[in-house]
Length: 565
Image (cartoon, rainbow, N blue to C red; front, side, top):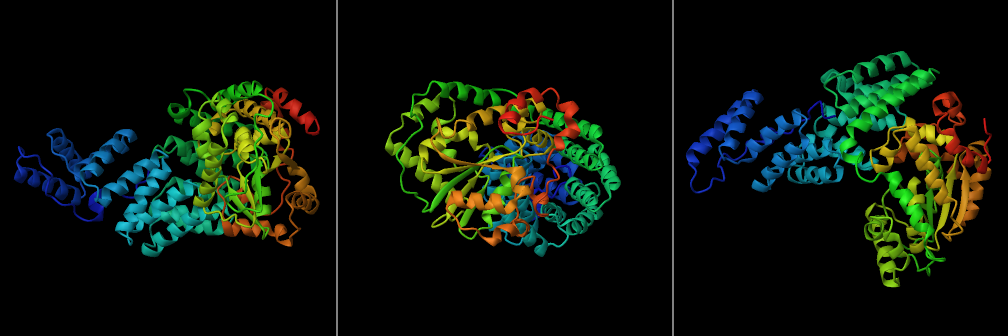
């Protein structure tokens, strides 16, 4: 979104006070006159000249939100986002009530992918100016990035109610429509955006997705090739366009070209996020150290005395496995049951991680934690659950987080009465799926931008998962993804029996729930179409480029009972 501005300068929200907060030795009248010249120049449309004046004024020691805001806009255009943020933070400190500054702060934080902080500023702008449509629109973008899909939809709707041609909100609404498989709606919204802002990346990608879904892959390919070469797009946007191009090529059976596109996408993302995730201890190195630490844990280290659920749930379930292993499908099926409350991929164990998971060796201290500390962390967990909007009281509560296998010591110790649903899928399809899909960037997903990194990370997760019932004394049911697709009723009824639930016909209608509820994972659009075995065995198309990692996966292929070829 960042290459196509949605408005961030304070004077777009009304004229600022021209009374500068001048120190005693400054000439207040001269400063006010200078600010007036800056404002009038900006209002005339010559932002470049206004910014030149602002740079000179700041260099001369004059500080005012308007000056900071203009210069921050230039730094952002230069790609110097941290510098822009620092200027806007100074502006905010100078004038905390300036809503234009807060809007600009939110936009820069959004560009830096600090979405929660950005949302706080957008919330403040909306509170101060409830009818300012751009704030609602970008607030929706932040909420969507955080996976709060229903709230994002409401924010986009409000922005469009206030300003029907707000193209940031239209592009966001198109993205949400594309997520739930409503491609005709997504097309209409995206085309409206592109008439107002040709080349707007989010709209181009929604339109390309609609082309692909509606049988026009050639049109999708052309759009995405143009976007990937558009110099106005950010490196991340160009990378995502190339990744989506991979899907378009894959749908046409052009596997070799598709793999080259996926590799190109991931190589660009590796470079774009190198400063954030490419140095220090990698996610894989952390897990390797954790596994080694766990080898030295005394017998019974992860056992504890159960406590009544502070959340009031009738049963507590952790749904895990690995990305692309079928966790989203299983969670949506369970969420359709009237006695189930499910939470989709939220970091509910943050407090325990902060206390005992920052370094792998801290787990040994956790093994010796006293009852008071365990009680505190359990209460903190249920408080997080409530903050995320879940209402587990009296229901079977399903906490779905695919990578929770890496948190098994915490889970086993804090919630010894909890049950585990472990989603399993052919390891080769899982690793290929992770390499192909575009996830929100984090240390684990950065690890999965190469096939080797994905395979090694998967291997580590399965090694930990294999210890459930032994080192981690939790009751577990493994749910095979392919079996759920092949015989839905039988597998779903087995899951119900494990969780102490009666069978519900509503579970068959999970696709409608996906469309209504909205989900944040890459599986969303696929699940709106119901059960599909389309991806089963898809790894065979890519057997040649996957050859180097197949030996790493072979033991799990054999252990899990999948055919070797």
